[in-house]
Image 1 (cartoon, rainbow, N blue to C red):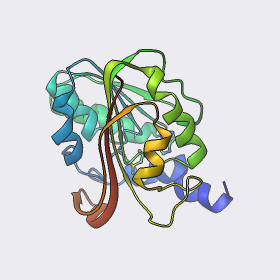
Image 2: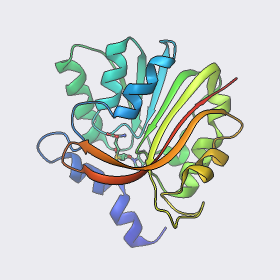
Image 3: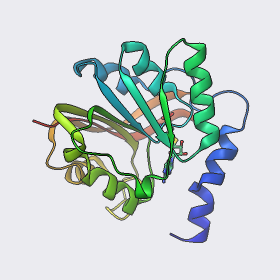
Image 4: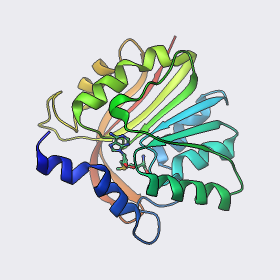
Length: 200
Ligand SMILES: C[S@@+](CC[C@H](N)C(=O)[O-])C[C@H]1O[C@@H](n2cnc3c(N)ncnc32)[C@H](O)[C@@H]1O
């Protein structure tokens, strides 16, 4: 990764964004997560690149035991504050996903909502998903798409992402322009990939 790219997406960038007043992506969960997560039996959930906690807190309110991982301590401090405000408990883990181990048959649900690390980090992470999920465990994923992106880029399309999460069984995989209304930073029309997959 170039120095410029590291600056644009490194920990300092995210700490700075999450130091702003309010919640950068709002306090409400992502709507794709909201519409799909009830298909998962309540159990152990891992939220990758959780940021300020909106998705983790929502899952905890549904009864999931949630672990939220992110390399921004500033973001996760706000996640804990949001959990406290909503009267639920979440576990937060400050870790760089570049060397994070998802474990073995550890999760009933893994959530990857706008987790868009550099491609080597993403590919290493997604390769671990099948082993990390329990039988019938699910993946809920939404990410931005750049139509010209290759697998080496940060925002690939749904076809590339489905290949990277193999051998999970895909229940839903779609790519579309959609209107986002999430806090101050996800506003307006954005092309995204949405995937729901399962370990059968
Ligand atoms: C666009 S934000 C999304 C936050 C959250 N998932 C949401 O939808 O509200 C991207 C998040 O990825 C985290 N992140 C990026 N690269 C990471 C890495 N290598 N390890 C851990 N977290 C990372 C950032 O700190 C940030 O919280």
